[in-house]
Image 1 (cartoon, rainbow, N blue to C red):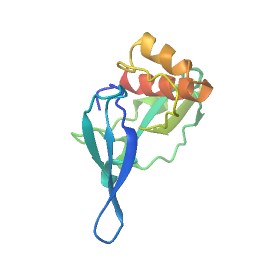
Image 2 (tube, one colour; image 1 turned 60 degrees about the vertical axis):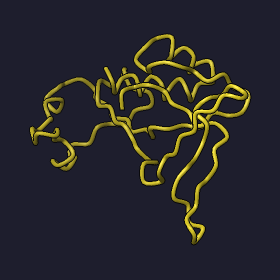
Image 3 (cartoon, rainbow, N blue to C red; image 1 turned 135 degrees about the horizontal axis):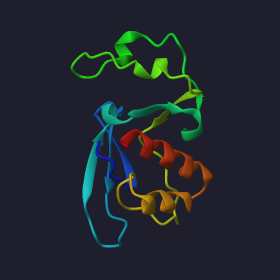
Length: 141
């Protein structure tokens, strides 16, 4: 995940022979007559991102618990990442899905979520989109 926003327009559910959903097929372009077909496996759907920081920076936020299992606090090399526990600031944590619906008629924001113009474009979609964008940007900064 690099922070780029990607979309699937005119989404169709792809099923196996038993009619069980196995993926989503859609056009990555919202321009009439332009086709850029993409397939997303059902096993890829449901990704999440998480941020832990001072409560005032996170929207929405919940108190970070003291009993987070250690395996969730390690990076890829196995290094324990718990230095935030010693901070005396009021900490918060947020976990949000890495996807969101866009309804017909909305202009699709483009660009990296780390850029102010992309967050502003998300804000124009509504308050829920702004909160998602701010939390997503925070997880990349």
